[in-house]
Image (cartoon, rainbow, N blue to C red; front, side, top):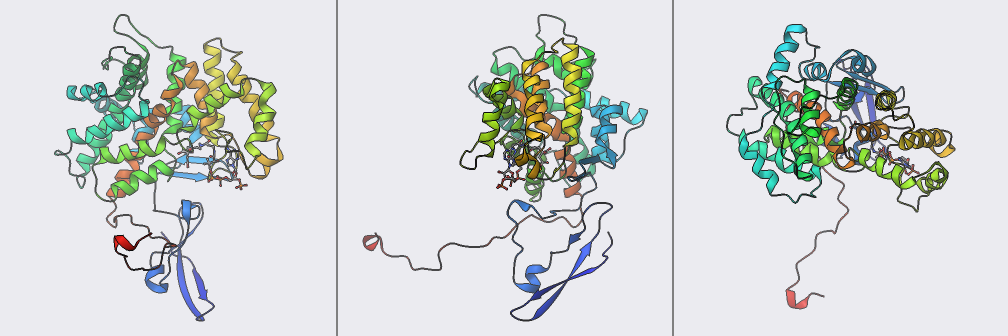
Length: 433
Ligand code: SDX
């Protein structure tokens, strides 16, 4: 990393200048190196929501929000979605390179042979009510994985960290499918080693033990692409949560669980479920104007779910790719006239012509169309965020690995601006009030 030029910070009161150096990345905004700010000035940098803060250096993903660019390890998302499978992308995110034939065969074999859960884990499901939200079940069961591998885990060992990554990528689909089966009272389906990663998941999720299940290859490819599009996204809220949890040296399975917890929020990965519920609530094209008005009304908490993004101030490239996938899936299922898709297309058209959305640069994000595709694939809306977690798990574990293997890694510990009470003496109980 080059340190190219200096910034001078001037305290006008004391007439003191502080020289700040900058760091330049491969591409994208340079950063002001603030690591010694407090030590030199006695002041903190204030940035709630981290809107202007680079929390780390990373080689994994690059986003240009103004240009609508997303790259994994330098490869544009559009090319990866067209030419690669999800497991190829997992290998890329974890190692930095796309696999050759031999590497892909070994990686796929490793994943396939770790899809089973320890049979004791099935007992964890039985503690939940059948109507428990699948994300609550995911938090419990993925968190429980940390109890099963805690001992054989030296996070300073690259070999142990690689095994964690394999286990997470391999077992999360099994857990997602089991969460669904449990919620509808159907028996768990065991994974099968003769199926591809996505075929295996679809069979565990949508098949049953009484008959053969072979998913439509168009739908398999569509779901594989959706996982690619959700695999990573730089320092988003859930990935930052995983990094912060991991910075204390916590068990990686528990760290991934912290990512699942954060992703569940409707402002983050919970938005895909919220989009579908919103479209069902809008119900008809005739009601769109009323909901657009609600979204613009500051006194109304309603927001247009699936719109807006902290980084993208242009089209989220993933939204375009998922919209294209929507057409493919609905075509394959003869659902050309799917009312929800038509409603979503019209809502997008009207919103993108509305001055409020144009001025605030609010465009459809990854969650706007994903729910429509997942619903067409037969996946219920309360499973949508679990599907997001299934795709994002590789990004979480890739960032965890990058963080924990950094020789300069230290525990994350932000400070604050204290605005509470000044020091005061405790009054005896009898004299309070
Ligand atoms: C994901 O970070 C990532 O990378 C996340 C993600 C990933 O892959 O990990 O991309 C996945 O989380 C996508 C986002 C999914 N969430 C939603 O679709 C929920 C709806 N969107 C918003 O809640 C909002 O846009 C956020 C949370 C996504 C971004 O919020 P910011 O960056 O904090 O922006 P903001 O809330 O400050 O909004 C700026 C302005 C505000 O108005 P003003 O106060 O300036 O007048 O835009 C308005 C907001 O009120 N606004 C919206 C809006 N989103 C922002 N108004 C109506 N509808 C919306 N959806």
